[in-house]
Length: 501
Image (cartoon, rainbow, N blue to C red):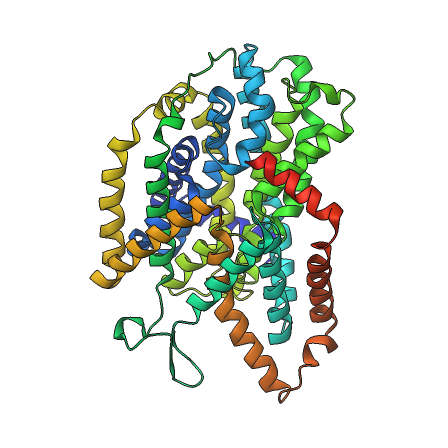
C-alpha cells in the first residue's frame, strides 16, 4: 500500500462519527489536563486505560493520542497567562511568554504558540506518513540481537535524560525491571517474585502500576501543593500577531519543527528535550539574544513548535518497532496490548486502518485544537481557579472503578493504592518515575530478545557484535554512558535540569 492509498484509508477511518467524536473528546480533555498544573497526560491516560477496553482499538488510540498532543497546546496557555506551566515541556514558554503577557502582548504570544503548534503538528504528521512505512520495512529485517540492542539504547537514554541524579535514575530503571520480572517465567514456567501469592502469577498489571504511580501519586502531590496554584491571569490582548511578529516567528517555527521532528524519534528524548533544545538554539542564532527572557516572541514560537512536533513523531518508534521512547508511549503500548494488538513493523500490514486512521486523526486533532484554544482561551484560564479539593474525590472514584473493572479484583485496587504511595514518595525525594515505567515495559522485552538471540547463536554472545546494526546501536549506547563521566556533559545536563525546575 502506497502513502496515498494509506491516507485515503486513514481519512475513511478517522472521519467516522465515533472516531471524530472521540478525537474531539481527546483533544478537549488533553487541553484541560495541560492547563491544570500537576495532572498531565501520563496520569490522565493511565487513569483512562481501563475504560478503553470496550472501545474499538482505533477509537481508543485516537482518543488517547489526542489527550497527549492536546496537552502540549493546553500547557502553553497557563504558562503565558499565569506563569504556571501546565506541562513540563511548557516550562520554557514561561520565560518569554509570560513576559510578553506582562507587557500587554498575551494574545500575540498565545497566537504564536498556537500557530507554531499547528504548523509543527502538521509537519510531524506528514513525517510519520512518509517515514513510518520505511522504518517498518527496515524493522522487518531486525532479529532478536538488533531489538535487544535498541532496547538497551532506549533504557540508557531514558536514564541519562531523566531529571535528578543519574544514580537515582539507574535505581528507578532497575526497580522497574524487577517489577517486570514478577510472574510466571514463559520459558521455564517457574514463578518469580510472587511470594506464593496466586494474584501475582500473571505478573503486575501495567495499568495498575501506572495508575497508582502517576494517577494517585499526582493526586496526593497536588493536594499538598494546592496553594501554589493561586495566580492572577494576565489580560488578553488582540489574538492577531503584528507584521513584525510574523516576520520574527517564521524562522523559529521552522527550526523548532525540524528539531522536534528529529528528537521525537529518538528513544527517551521526548518533548521536554525538544522544547529546551529549541529555546537554546533560538537564543544562540538570534541577533538580539539579550531580549530572551524579557519577552522575545522567538522564545515562544520555537519551543512550542518543537514540543508539538516531537509529540507527533515519538509515535514512530512505538508503532513501527513496538518500542516506547517515553512513559506516555509505554502507556500507548499498554492500550494496544490490552486490545490484542501487538505494535511493531507488522502493524502496517495487519492493522493498516489503525495506523493510517491514527495518522490522519492527528492532523484533524491539531486542526480542532487550533479552533479550541484561541477562541476559548478565557475559559481555559478560568479552569485553573477551580479548587482542587473539589476535583480529587471524583478523580479517585473514577480511578478505583477503572482499575477494579480490569480484572474485577480488589487486589488490583490495593496494589494501585500501594503504588500511589510509592509515586508520592518518588515525587518527594525527586525521583522521576518515567525510567521505572519504561523499564517495566522494556525489561521483559529485553530478556525475551536476549534469550532468543542466545538460543539462535547456541550461547555465543558475539551475535550482538557481528550484526552491523546491533554493533552500531550498542556503540552509541556505550558513548552515551561514557559521556556521563564528561564534566562538560554533566554541567550542561545539570543546567538544563535546573531550568526545568
